[in-house]
Length: 598
View 1 (cartoon, helix red, strand yellow):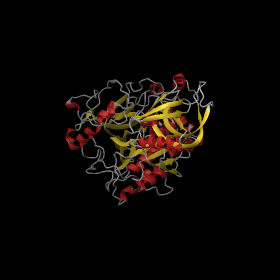
View 2 (cartoon, helix red, strand yellow; view 1 turned 90 degrees about the vertical axis):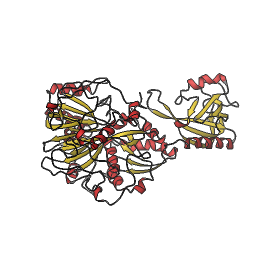
View 3 (cartoon, helix red, strand yellow; view 1 turned 135 degrees about the horizontal axis):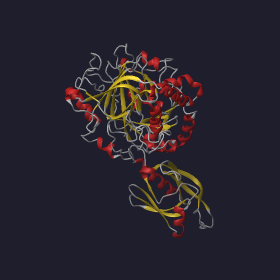
View 4 (cartoon, helix red, strand yellow; view 1 turned 60 degrees about the vertical axis):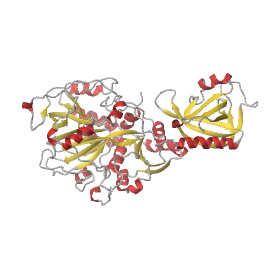
């Protein structure tokens, strides 16, 4: 029917000629005296457009006979009446908010015709056109956290659920009842059952998303452990990491130490429940399962989504630019897709005296040690304060001003300019860091980011290429050591934007370039550290330009500390570890999003 058309009555406009093209509809008022007022002066609903892309249409509904409004802001009437009873159908689409350019809002185009069959034909044809749109989900599993963000999880789902119903997207809704509920459900779900869904949605904060992420990847991500400075041997011991993969029998997703750290006394900043609890079995002993998965990541069909309902919602803000449940719901329904890097964190030892036992976890936004981990741990003493406990505990940890002795080694990339090349200064083939690196020009990740698209096919500067090369030839690895006393050690996978840090921790971090942004904050006077932290609250500032701050773009790093109670913050989840290896897994998962818009 490309190029076909007809005459319909459009509510608020009047009679229009409708033309159908391969990519959408266009309509033009028959009465020229009402055209300008109809398209530019409508105030009763979001501004209507004269052309509608099928990619922006999420539903078509056939309605019973009812009133169709005549043209607004004019004196034109139809058959002597302002409202006319007609057969009707509604095209549900998206448009922009009038107040802000980025948030999406639903809008309706109500068409009418005196003939019932004509209405049905038009509705069926437009429905057929939008059904041809690829990548739109048909069946989703939804986890709703009822306690996150002061109960916003349930309220937000009630608000957006009608959109999914209208778009005929089936949803299996699970309200989480305990810590680790989503993790246990997904980790124990057979791949046959998982393949019935097009994706999993988290109605909650970053903590719930992290739980879902780890539940999915625990047995379904086939990848070697991160490389280490001594090549193919575990750093700091004689442990060999040969041929170990995330679903090999030697990979333990959690140990007794994990369960103690992630017990019911520890909550996430975004969700008011911990990731894991010892109260009941959570399916953690995945390595003992005989199941051979045939669903693996990355893949090109399964996606994750978030309806933001947490305390910070950094992942949503970094991937869509908006903390808006309706916008996120529409992105999911319309099947938008972006690839997202994930940090694979392998703990070798939970404490200096513990045995070497690799334990794998994943983080989508951030992995932090020192200040970042202590804030989450300290907040557990003030649970009665609610979400305000994070501000209070952050202040308390800041005033203590603790630093930690540690050693960090990271893989050098070609554009690093802070390294010495003198062979006499190498230690076991690893070059020591000598001076502060220069600050390159920032390229911000946006929708249709050319860097994320370029690295998906480029043979240069890709984190995955560097990691693959490092595994192929251990002798050619180029590691750089940085050691001393640090206030914090952090690795940002994405920008980590939030309402208090409008540019995030690393403004120019990209969603899918295969790199981590390693942030090493060396011990410094308290006023300097305060100056550094306050720069995050100012849009356009550069909090990483201080001399006591090291910022390295790297595909992998390793960390060692002799501190007995070393804890990491992984997307707001506590993880006890004194020796870890971390690598960026480029585009490991796909997200229902389109990238942050300008």
